[in-house]
Length: 123
Length: 108
Image (tube, rainbow over all chains, first blue to last red; front, top):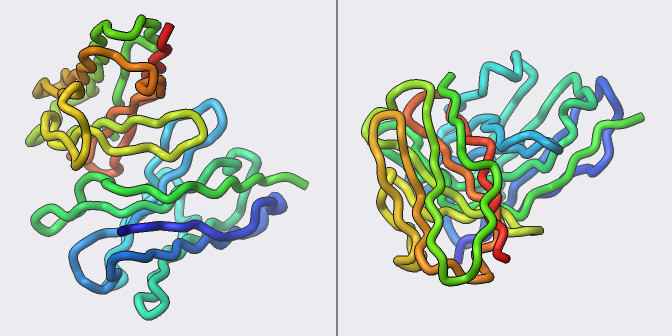
């Protein structure tokens, strides 16, 4: 059974970088089937797609983040990660990792979500 | 970026009633690439519908999706108390993928 679990700090300082990791169990990341994604939910705001990564290392980042993102994958550890730089209070959110179903050459919809990790940006 | 608008913002209904939730896109959604998610209090979102009308695994047939172009609906027939949740539509037709603001369903 598929399970995704986020981990990382809950409190970070403004202007710092946060690193979040998603550990996947129940399916192989390197199977070449699924895409893997990060989505966040800011307080009082809607869900926001951050980006996705494929097991090859190919990535797509939401342009709204203005080059503040880095995603990586370590298939041997069954993990993929997100780093967000230059944090502000506006980055306070629940960060979800998720599995994305594949289309013919591109990602489609999320079919499974992690439980989410609250990241608070505050001094 | 495709903007999704959902209506109503909140729906308050009694068990046994039916509910129709609307999702409107700022531009036409190619190949009906719309999904619907249910998020119960304290839980992660759960996939209900993809491809505008295909039910995800283990989703009861009380949930159905429809629509095309820019207008899509999620219909919940015979509401149950466990359906209390926020429902989000999501487009995966054009990057960056986007979500609607959600419709909260209250069960009276």
